[in-house]
Amino acid sequence: MVEYHIDRRSGVATYLQIVQQTKQALRLGLLQPGDRLPTAKAVVTATAVNPNTVLKAYRELEREGLVEPRPGLGTFVRRSLARPEAAADSPLRAELAAWADRARAAGLDREDAAALVTSVLDERFRDGGTAGATTVESTNGENG
Amino acid sequence: MTDENGDIAGSSALEATGLGRKYRRGWALRDVAFRLPAGCVCALVGPNGSGKSTLLSLAADLLAPTTGILRIFGHAPSAPEARARIAFVAQDKPLYPRFTVADTLRLGRELNPRWDQRAAERVVAEADVPLAARVGSLSGGQRTCVALALALGKRAELLLLDEPMSDQDPLRRRRMMGALMAEAAEHGTTVVISTHVLAELDGVCDHLLLIGDGRIRLAGESDAIQSAHRLITGARDGLDPGAGGHTVVERRTTGRQLTALVRSATAPVGDGWIVREPSLEDVLLGYLRSPDAPPLITAGARASSRDVVR
Image (spheres, rainbow over the protein chains, first blue to last red):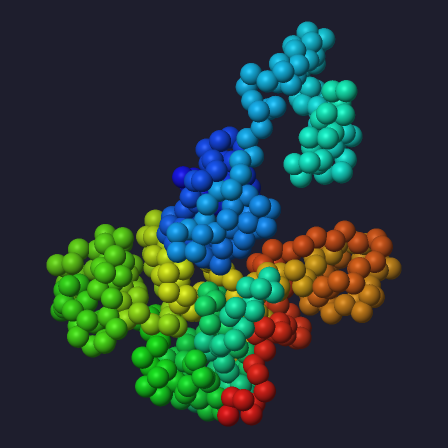
């Protein structure tokens, strides 16, 4: 089960915050296929947001194929966003850690390194790269 | 958006045509026309004395209109079909001070055929109001909770709440809103909450009704109202914010800088401007500061033709 935290000053639309937090939970494995999302009633009782906002967020997740409503039972997770390629013991992470060590040894501080990473990501993920397929392709492309 | 509107567009919870109310000192409401789809949660916003309470009192049948018609689920406010379906929490919360909270809920149970004791008790418990306490000994905020418990216990389809959060501490406000939203989620209740502090209702309302000086200034879905406006900034000289044929709601100058709130749904604003999407509060303030700006009533909030209402 997840718990949503709505930040009313963030400027991000409330329904989008629910979508993003659900995806984050899917990425981290806090939600797995078959798990039930909290009911709209439970969410609004805890957060005092409009129920239509919660339903809109769930519809968006459904449109992306991440969850499915089962009438009378609730909304259930269909697929996970957790990627074995991004796990703590993955080769990709090890390469990045080695790179970070080299950057540090070369005298870059944290902000320099972050700026460098961001600029490379901007360059390589120019198409947005949020959808599963495109991200995997460009990652493979870099490896090969 | 269209599918969710399609669901609720069928019936109106509240619909006004040519509605007006005159007091001895003048018109409190004038030429008010709008519709509120059933199932929405609507913020009724406006400065003090703008006519919010008058509109709610007309809907609750505590006042009769001077002109025009108001319909509640298609019925006149005085019709039994309408009165059974609405609950009104007035600003002064008329409760019996010598009754205990439990007595008050019991009275609600005796007077209302569709009474939901669990819903009423849940609100009182959420707000930490002891059932044995006399209503007269409660704080203003606690009394509001008892009034809200009565309204929710009535299992009304349209809840009219006149500034219910103004005397609540932040924690209780959050709990009351949570209880209210849970009710709306479970039963599809239509809720109208008046306030002069929109920030209080941030994230709560999907519809908005702005009243200024007795007239409707904005009516419709909050998203649609917000996205129909742009906040543009540029140099004062040589630029005309209305050049693209936009309606300029408000323009202000600071030194050489000109800031304008324009109504611009699709058309580009033109070169030389920095364009931002305003917050809902920016839009409201723009309209309140410019009493002459033309009102905006979205398609979904327009009253249907008069012959249907009649």
